[in-house]
Amino acid sequence: MTEIRGLYTLWLREVKRYLRDRIRIVSSFVQPLLWLVIFGTGIRFSAAISNVTSQGYIFPGIIGQTILFTSMFMGISVIWDREFGFLKEILVAPVSRMSIFLGKMLGDSTDALIQGILVFLLGVLLGIPLTAVMFIEILPIMLLTTFGLVSIGLTLASFIENLESFGAIQSFVNLPLFFLSGALFPVNGPSLPNWLRIASNFNPLTYAVDALRTITLGRSWQPGPIYPLYYDLLVICCFDIAMIIIGTIAFNRRK
Image 1 (cartoon, rainbow, N blue to C red):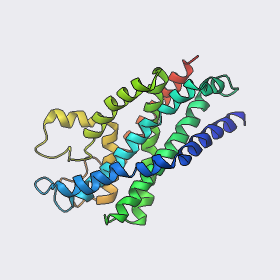
Image 2: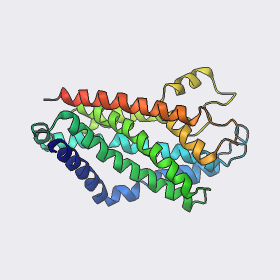
Image 3: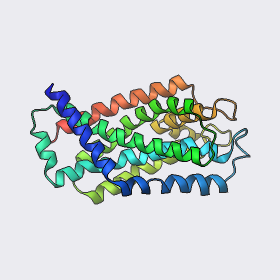
Image 4: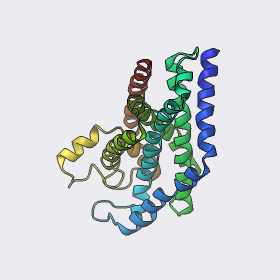
């Protein structure tokens, strides 16, 4: 019971801290809105993609981008907790390091999931053809994706001592993951260089975006999904397990 209570307390703390930061919640609409309205309207993919609008195509990628940036940013909570001494109090509590990591990871994942849901609702308001069934289907995909990405942020933050360094490392990790995920262009297109296609195969966000796009667009558009949906989910789950293990080990090494 102690482990469950500790895990729940950490989860609740992260969620409450996020929900009370209303400025961050409101401002988080700006970046997805700019991508969807300006980039999605100004760029046309008719030469490479058929049977889908440019906004409809990049929308799953923008959900992936929002989850990525929010999840990675959540790692900053570790640095703040260390600065104010709260992390030391957590680490000396009679709770295992694994429960500590899982509690923070689940809390931050919930925050990132809420952010993804808000972007989905934004897409509905912009007139992108989305349904309640699509929402129900993409919800577990978004949640699974946040587990691994939040774990990356927490793991990086556990080795970094100050906010400035974390910001630099975060951008260094975020941008390649985003641009190599196929969020803005088809990574299985015929004109894509082989090196870029190979790099995207090693990107976990590629499989999340592909799964989201499979649900929101179906399989009738060209060049179509990169992988079958079950394969995307399998890779995402393996990525989550690997990052949770790595993150737990990183927290176990903290003193």
